Amino acid sequence: MTYHAAQPFRVALIQAYIELGNPPENRSHMRTLMEQAVTAAQKPDLIVLPEMWNTGYALDRIHELADKEGAETREWVAAFAATHQVNVVAGSIAEKKSDGHVYNTMIVFDRTGAEVASYSKIHLFRLMEEEKYLQPGEEKVMFTLDGGIQAGAAICYDIRFPELARSLALSGSNLLIVPAEWPHPRLHHWRTLLTARAIENQMYVMACNRVGRSGDTDFFGHSLIIDPWGEVIAEGGEQEEIITGTMESALVQDVRGRIPVFEDRRPSLYDR
Image (tube, rainbow, N blue to C red; front, side, top):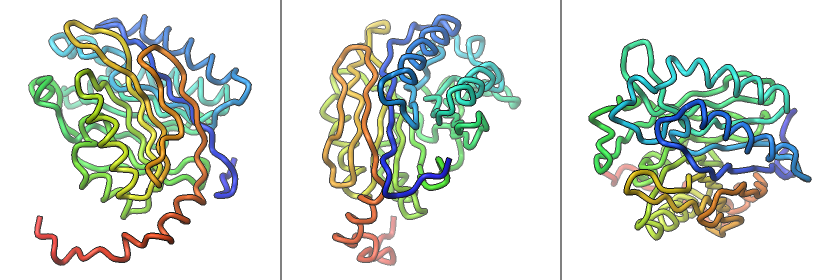
């Protein structure tokens, strides 16, 4: 399928509860929710899952729980994408790579089940001691959906670094996809940062957060689909649900034409 800018691109964000340290249960639960998404009255073109949905933040056991080379995730999500002819951003998972390190990795599949991108989170969150258990990625990642949607990857804490989103936008992204595990009490930060990334880069932002309590932490959901004007198209509550909305790529070009931010940049004056 080839996407044209004039046609709507439907998205479903799977705002789910994640059971700490239980990959088999989380896989089963996520598959059930994905089945619900593809059998809805309006089938999505893209499904997005939350961050670290296979294990949650069971960091003290992450080396034994992580999906080795992401093999199990890759196998069943690729088959799901092909069977239902839907693009899937498989949130992010704890992935143990051949170098022996565990990464927080987003994997993307197209409608045929082919893997089109893999991105490992480059900014590790010290408040949750990610840097003690996980290895950071070393490169930004962009990918194309349906031959016409240029998307950039970010994971949770990455949105606090505007340089990443701006770099992706300058490289051609018109959509930023953000799986997350973002907790209370920072709901205001979540909504503000995502809205800012959309406005300043004149791009769509689609952010899928988890819900539920894990240890002493409460995750609030509020998954968001935001347009290039910074208007919220859809927002979840604090319960498990599937949030849906539509992207129209033509709006990105319209907004960028009305306020020529990228043409008015003066990078020679930005010393850092």
